[in-house]
Length: 222
Image (tube, rainbow, N blue to C red):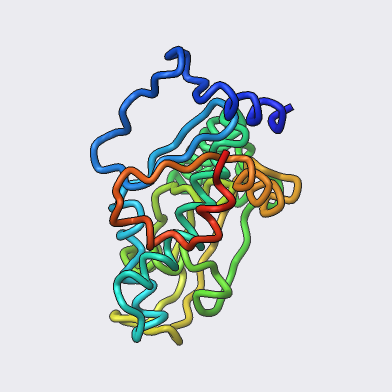
């Protein structure tokens, strides 16, 4: 159904009820994405918040290369994944916020509001705990819970159990108790890749045309 709707949106030019004239993008938008009647803006700050962590992992990379890594590995798939099922995305966030409140309040190890099996203890480097968790853990005190944040295809929060002193390098290992509340349960990466092929890209800031690899620009032609 969403495939057909995405195709219809492309033929009509817009599905925002504006009769074909698109509303302006929010201030600071560098890339805009349309999919199945929904749209999302990507701002420079959405990408740049990850640059310090990516620089710790790839210290020889230039700023444009780090932006490309952050955009294609985290920001773009997260943004497009959030357009696939907006209602379930909102519901998953509510579940995550309730579960975090339970944990912070010191309730049972598996609070009723948590999805079964959503909590796990992970140890290792950024590839083992997830780069987004590893990056955010750099600003969390040992023993504290992170805020709820959006990861690719879900909402996440964690408690930092063990970590060495800062600053961290690409070899730094940590231990976290992580909770994930997915909103795309069935092959999320496959769903996101399909959505990329059915989406329409607007390059709002021309300086970002070369940050996004050409293969994505060709795929996201609506």
